[in-house]
Image (cartoon, rainbow, N blue to C red; front, side, top):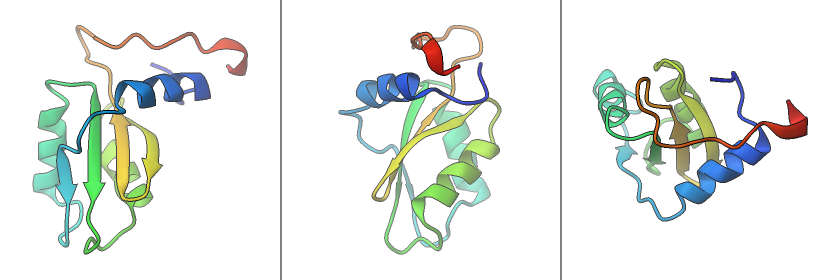
Length: 106
């Protein structure tokens, strides 16, 4: 997997997750070990994961998303908007999502 997603790949992933509701909500305790474990568990069954950072969370959405992605192998922040973040991690054995070629950006 590439270290960074290209804009074409990010757009593809955003379109795949457009109608996806947030699965993980991060509240006033922030990104705890339990939340990190829930994110890792959720990535066992899916490749795209939407996080919602609530208003009472101690950090903004971007730092929380980056910290969540750093705690997992091959996870990347695709997009943040408002209080929502989209994370991507391909399945290690059987990836369901095929990313478009990197194109001229690579």
